Image (cartoon, rainbow, N blue to C red; front, side, top):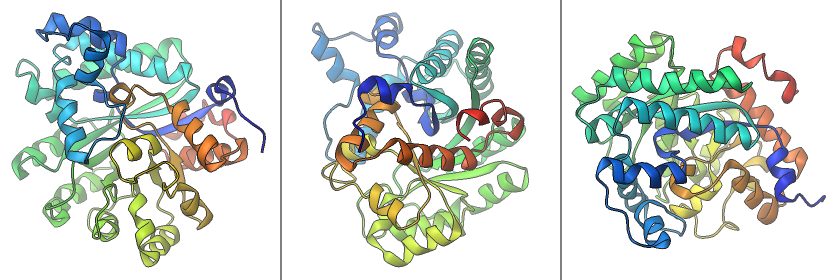
Length: 340
């Protein structure tokens, strides 16, 4: 296998389907803005990183999600949201990404900032994306996230908002910890969104749980998921693995994130190679690069170093991701030549 160095990996043209926009704030921007929004920074550089970043494995997904709330406080104005959207696109472009899907939860941002409503948030983020696309040749789409932990009435409001803005949202997602949340509760909302023309992806099968594989099946059969965010725990169930493979449901796999949230204890234990060998459609993603202090190229580097991924493997994953992307064909055709 040809050894790929950091610059080789960075120069590879990439597709990314699973990146949280509200958790992609550039580190220098985070440190600059924190005092302006009333956050007292730790006196040392390491202390500041400990406030916001997750760079070592945490004990569970809940611990990780709680840490995200610290970074949420920075998302305090329309101007800031426009800036972080622009910078998220710029950082991705400089890392070789030419087709990018960004997702965010309107509730996550609005809950921390009562001066911002969903429309203000969405238009501010959209403005940043459009500014980036004016100067960088890349295709970008936005996905609206429904949080499982919110009430049904809040979820319904978010879904209606996504439908009302279906000209600038490409899909609906369901996120947060799955345990204890019956997908049937959300089924009418996701059916409504799908009927309105939105695509569906669902965070599922991420955490190590004996029920995780069945959750993936429910996400597909009950919620109508066309793709699965993470989904790696299907490795526990050969029948479920076959189900996902035969249905041709792509997985949005996030290797570094899965290690930091301890979906698997080590990088060596990650099943991405097994999934690919079994014929499952796999894509590679960074998840929350602002929180993890990573780039998508860092995920590639891990796969190259630990699982011997080659340029051929990366190209295969990017072609899967390109075909699975919910971005319009009109946008995709602008960058198709980069991948085929």
